[in-house]
Length: 153
Image 1 (tube, rainbow, N blue to C red):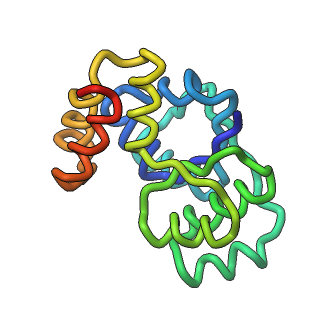
Image 2: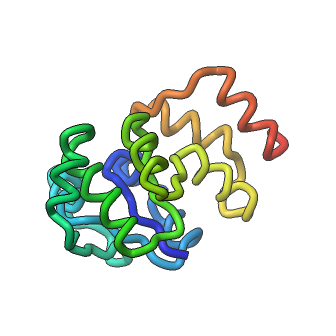
Image 3: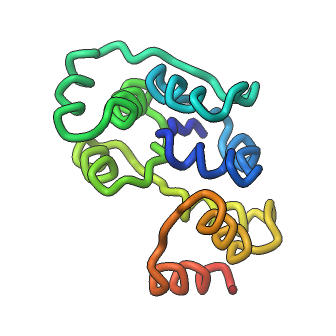
């Protein structure tokens, strides 16, 4: 399974020291050049398992960049070009645009729930609390509670 990632979810996982969940969940984790540049500002060096790829259709990226930021625009286009199984993205506008373009998405919450289902973490609740407190992730109480019920927490 190939996942292309935007900056925010990777930054959050790197911040709390749980980024290795990604290569344990997905066969390949790829970021576009713009996302790598954004990540390098605060998380250098980046993990060895994180691969970078260059977007081919820069005109399409330009169209997407009228709606979302550069990292999101490149991530959406790269996921489209690579026929990625998922695009890891949390921002609402980016998720909507990706879905409109036929790119399947997963968010950080989905990654946490998947990790719990595969027994890669002992508690989804504990990781979500850390992501909120240490990395600034925000979830409404209702969404958090509904999601945690799906993994028995």
